[in-house]
Image (cartoon, rainbow, N blue to C red; front, side):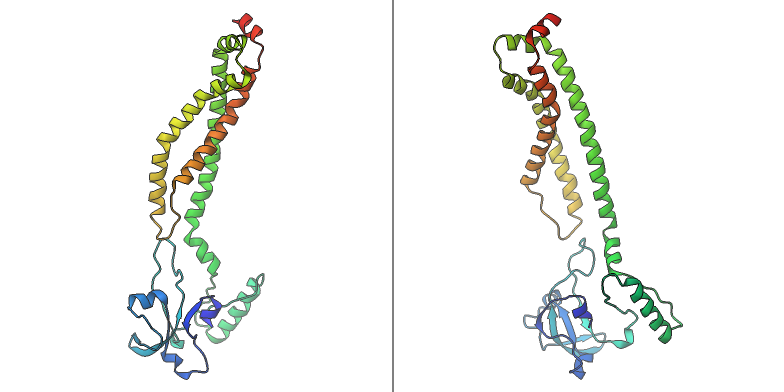
Length: 261
């Protein structure tokens, strides 16, 4: 039957059964339906839908019948063969073509006057989130491009800075400054720039992400940890980019640097 086939979880009562002839007038409802109707013990209570009077025999666990952009809406299941214009078919994996062919032939045999229009639930779900999937892919691509271009800029700036400070580096090495100290000195300025960029960018990123997530009734929460992890990752990428030139400059021969100057 439909409820079992779709994997809905029965939390109270029972499912529709051929053993009960009266089930054609009974209902299986969702938990949200019981809450909306203010029913604390819905099993056995009377319900009238579209002039059809019956009783509730089962309650299924809440599920999403639409996109996650909307909250869970109440649902009522009933046996109404006269409205059976939709038929759900569960087929074995890898046999979609065969299933469509068999169902199409059966449909043509009994209802040749009406067109056969097969649809797949996975494709329906995919269409619901197609724009989000596309946004995610484009965001990943442009983020990668942005990081690459930023790294090129940082590397160029690091090269330019070390060239301008060649004499200073030579003097400091001649006075006994260690390679580690010189490397940290050269990287410090870039770290300050990255931290400044993070201070400016995080509020804007938080606002944009919050506006996007607020479109959905059910979504992940934006926490400080997300921005801290992102900031640390950006700092690590920046340091890896500039550390090569900084270490190279710190290891250079101070005598050669001073002669050049």
